[in-house]
Length: 461
Image (cartoon, rainbow, N blue to C red; front, side, top):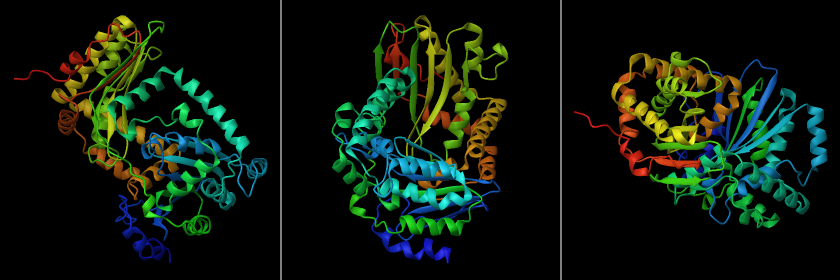
């Protein structure tokens, strides 16, 4: 029986793990979602829908947070090697097989999670799962492909360095989480890329891609028992070794500043962020709603004084920036909450003042209408993500929570968000806190860090 697969058979394996989900049991899932844990620790989550297509993804707890300075970038390197051929199938055979199935593969790597995904017809699910399993168990790692991907990654590095927004957020992680693995770039440094070879990559795969770090998820007209059987056939042979369990390292936040001045750039790109709780926090939705209240704006957007966000009203009517966007980046146990903006060099001081003024108003005088607008926009944002590809939501919750909240439960939680608890949460995490500040471009007019820090509080009587 399915429930026996996910419970008693894995108790002995879980007992040897320090992993956060070692004591969890698959529960609290929507009626059309099934979640279980195989005997070796692989999580299998499925959502049955009437869609004729199947969306299948393999989520892996891997990324730059689980790497060291010596192997930083290896997970991203493995992503590049993923579909370059297996010992049992050349890349040309793989290409022909995908063409005949009409399937589309994708891969992406972040600081905490790596995803290999596919969209296909339901009858091709078994073949797709076989391909996804080969990515972590049967990579060919030919020297010719390794050299080609080294070159491609170097080109990717050049593109990343030419994108001011990506540079800002890489610097933001480096300064906010300095001295911790979260500060490392996903792509890694050039010196590491040149060192990665077949033996190094194969050893890392064997040691760090453990079954208890895997979650196989699907959405579409796929039967859960059938998915479990596929998972047992392809991943059931993997044997986890708790001795190789990755240490995710500390998650220390440091209020600090990084400035890269380049007067040849037409605009300055700036990000200001504070420490925030992670994905599993009970205050996640409140801070997400607060972020939606601040909102986003760019010059292509109309509205002027009729924009809902006070910061957008100010930006539209005074022309102090080209664009801004509020962000809330979450990891398992920590996050970054803040605002990224692009503006002319002479408007930096005014823009920083307006952002901080908006934040302080959130902690002092959030209105009922603003709280409801923020909660509804947060709901819309989450609902769009789930409706776009449910696998993303299922996989994230399977990795972080080992359970799944339905959109109805999320809506119920957001219905409790009001102006009072938003003010309390903003006061707790933002008011009078040291920010991390990053600026790239013509930054001459940016206030120094002590002035920005002083703007994080108001004298209140």
